[in-house]
Length: 378
Image 1 (cartoon, rainbow, N blue to C red):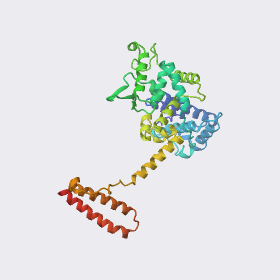
Image 2 (image 1 turned 90 degrees about the vertical axis):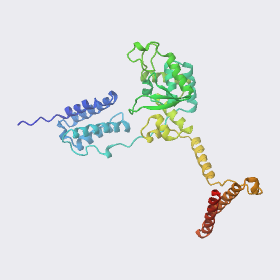
Image 3 (image 1 turned 45 degrees about the vertical axis):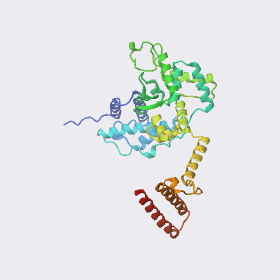
Image 4 (image 1 turned 60 degrees about the vertical axis):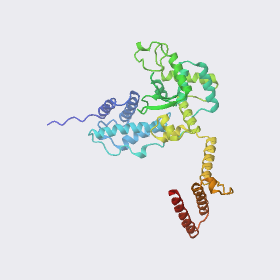
């Protein structure tokens, strides 16, 4: 009986790409295609004898490929090299799962470069104000879309995919924006204030007047000719507005998202809620977006100290007032007096460190509690 031919490495990897095409987005699939092409080109030029998956070895094939990524000019960022490794490892795992005899541990944790940690990139308060004023003066469809990005912290792709019915009431004068499936394949709700609602109303006023005749009539962002703005068109519009406003730094749509996150934290929104507003699955990602200024740290520190001090304060008691049980209501007056004595006793016990000193006061406090319980029955 003739044994089946072993597929070549190129055929096996191309077959895995065909399988991934059924579940991944085209942009994500393109990244897998890139890493496959680069890996095969490396093997073709340096190890042409490798023809099937079973011949792959960690050294020199995989390690050589990693070295070539490291030596590339201009150099790749660590994040880019990490993505190449993640995608190649996924493809090799899938080959092994399909029964190809691959060697173990072709890619290990030690092969991943350390992550680059960048500071958050929100706009400065001055540039944020200048840009907001310029976009308000322009007041066209791209400018309104950029203002909505800044007001909600959405990704630009999510904003471009908003539908006409994205605004939903949840209570009297309370509205939320339904953000469609985005980068992480999740939907979410974002609360809106009146200014953000007015932005959506202004977008609807500038929208194509006859969208029903178009292929995609349900999208919110449609110009007068029925065309959807692209990512590049929105980005170029932001660059022009920033230049007109006199902003010195390079401003991208994603920096508006950083500004939104930092503004939420500075306004007192908790970190978990900010994570939900941004649509993150990991709070560590949210921390990359949030800029905590010195003023924020001072405010939070002194607020916490104030709470700590108030936690241990005992309420003042009107002990200097004459006790008149008839004027205060008989049994109720006795209960109030006992409560005052119990509080003073508890305060005094906190100042005693020795257990021998606290035990008599504890017994006395227990008796007072029993007396209060008996008074409550009368």
